[in-house]
Length: 83
Length: 83
Length: 153
Length: 153
Image (cartoon, rainbow over all chains, first blue to last red; front, side, top):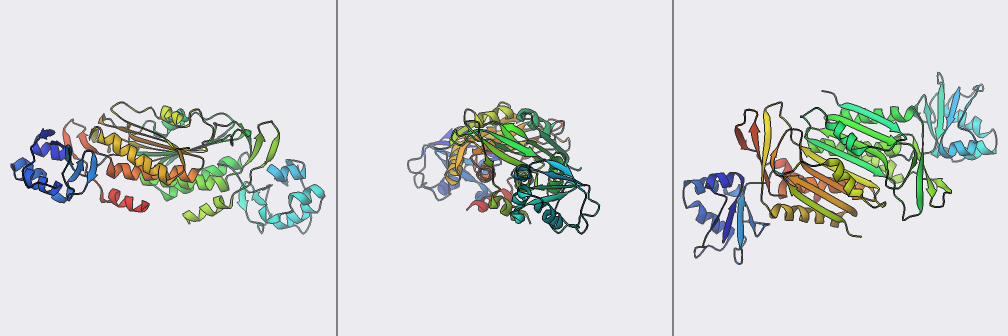
């Protein structure tokens, strides 16, 4: 599964994208955030304010309770500031 | 006193402007409309739907009860359709 | 800083690129520009042109007044309004309104307000010229347009 | 006739006049064009540039989705949206939204709606670059912008 990071989430985790194998028991966006936040300090910092993190599955915005089944690309990023 | 007519008011009275000497007793826009409407068929037709006629004194929109004292230029026209 | 207000009443075609460039020219404090362009429609091919009559002098004065009203309501940096008179072909611009502000809400609201007021308060009258060149009647004012002013009081 | 929707995400400067001309090109049924342009401000001379990061692919898709939503709500004839990414200098365009309709109310409302949704739903993030070239922090999302979406529900 491909994971993308943008803006300060990207800066804090220290990379823009990576491939991961989904650990057993991780079935939702929230579960994936828990898993990633446990990796190291940078990831923990990136996901510290959990409620502000936005997620997209296959380029569609989703809530944190969205299931990961069938997803090819998950993205995490701060609230958008375009326009 | 200079009087201007625009759009279908102009077409109905048959002229775009004229100079008139204000008759005694005519002191408001409404009074002037009464006076003009009594002139001939064209003027009567122009001012037939009195409520729809807009008036301006010295290029400022006014109500029909506005006094004519001091006015140099009075204009009569239909509701505006610019924009 | 007071809004820079600029108004033109003209029988020449409107150069949109020049109008838009002029709105923001020489300043970097503008974050938002809203524009509205009213165009002559061909009414399904039945219309050859619009002929717009205006009240010279009063037309400019009323437009400036409406622009000043907008600038008193919203923190505008610039307002540009161009209104044509004379013969206007389908596809050509009848009116252009441009507003510039630091933020988008003011620019949008002011442009909307300006159009509502220009429609009912600026002394212009439209007559339709049919495809065969004959004059149709004067365009009637819409009650909707007068009612729209209630949005701003 | 369905609205003609056209979207671009680009790192090249926006030619506003060309964008506006394209909105009405080759048709005479458009009576109203509303546009909004968001520009980079210099923040009193303290800002050298904005650097805008985006999510390629999703950015275009989300903008098209928002444009389709607008076209489903209002009788639009054309929608054009251009959003820049990369480095943007003060005075340059960040976003351009143009809407065309037969009548003005639809064009205005749709442009306003599009900007509200682009602000909070299109995946772009702004970072400020100070006058001395150093990076400032990421621009924070405003609660106001999220709240603005409530105007349309």
